[in-house]
Length: 169
Ligand code: HQG
Picture 1: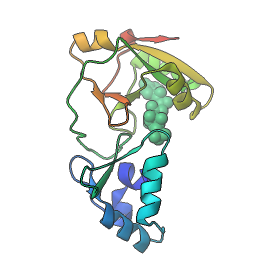
Picture 2: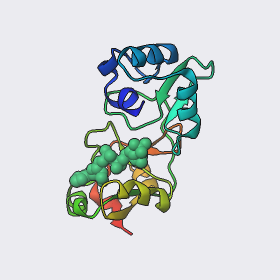
Picture 3: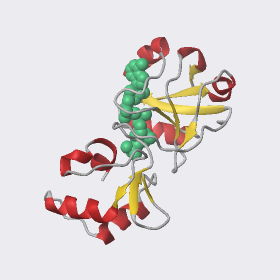
Picture 4: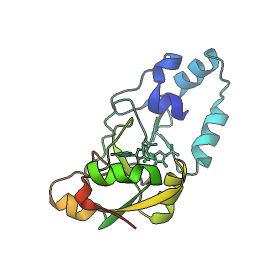
């Protein structure tokens, strides 16, 4: 579901609307047609048990989208918000020199992903290797005009973090 809803909807002939939503019935039908068995119960089970609440279902129960993490262009539609004073980014030791010199970039995703707490950032960083937590002066960035968005699941998103707002913790 992450692969299709974040990165490659066309792999099963699916289209996402500009906000990343797609029909649940269509996702199920196209997934099964492409050889990955998926029932409505399976889908709802994934939505309910995803540890990071990766997927949102629309209020009418008809549509689904990934809450964040997209590499395809989507406008999640949440308004820019004032962030907490500090946000955190978990990465791996081998990326730190580059990040401290050129800042945090969104790489293959649409935006840089930031966590509200250090424990979550550590989990994110561990996916890449020996984790390092970077502290981001988010409120100071906001005061200087950088925009922050909070995804449906509480992950904070911004376009980039210049090095002057970053410190290793
Ligand atoms: C690094 C997961 C060198 C960045 C997580 C990261 C998150 C740089 C990697 C979500 C750099 C990109 C996103 C620079 C950034 N030089 N390296 N200038 N700027 N990087 O996977 O934040 O489990 O695209 O530090 O929990 O790790 O999939 O981003 O290490 O919420 O739901 O480039 O994905 O969620 O890696 O993870 P990613 P991320 P899910």
